[in-house]
Length: 259
Ligand code: DGL
Image 1: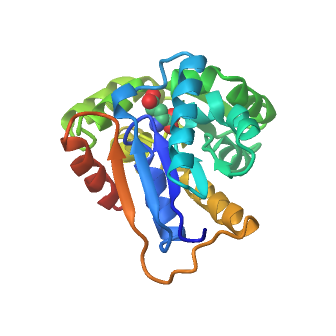
Image 2 (image 1 turned 45 degrees about the vertical axis):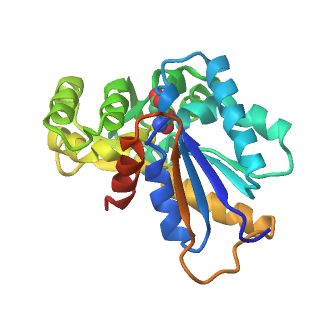
């Protein structure tokens, strides 16, 4: 079982920012990445729709004999992870959630402001509302959906002028608010960090759940005794549900981008 793959999925290409972290922490594992670009975005869908899509991908990875499944999508995690864990009890299902806890803990009682960027669905779901409730008296927390980043990353425009002008329009009202920390609550958003920094300033600090999720995968593999015994780099199978042949090439390029 040890060399069985880890299945990872997202609504599209965002989850590659999680795969990138997993490769650093678990380089000898084999990965199958499924970008559901055909159905992107998830963030503006109903919870029930995102649950059905997520269930489909979990079943796909079970057929592929995955030893762990990573929902590399904050939106799908909030809509589906808890129910899927109850349904498929034999396999660890690891999810992503906006890294509000480390941000609020770091800035507790400092008067510093935190901006949480995520999808509409993530922000309205109980899972995030519960998290917010836990930390809202510790720091000033502002919430903002940013669906345009998802669209631009999917359209191979992560590094474009269009990305910069979208972020300028979105964040210009926040410049005067003096934001100290930005929670990247959607896995597409790390690819727009450069533009966020340009608008909010070089000193803005980012909080991203990817590294924590990768550590949780390591922990779960140890717990289930399914860590790979290999000492050479594992394989990465990049897949996409869309018919667009360029998606795989774009996935590879995003995977190669260094932070
Ligand atoms: N990448 C996803 C997330 O982490 C969602 C993007 C979308 O499809 O709306 O939330």
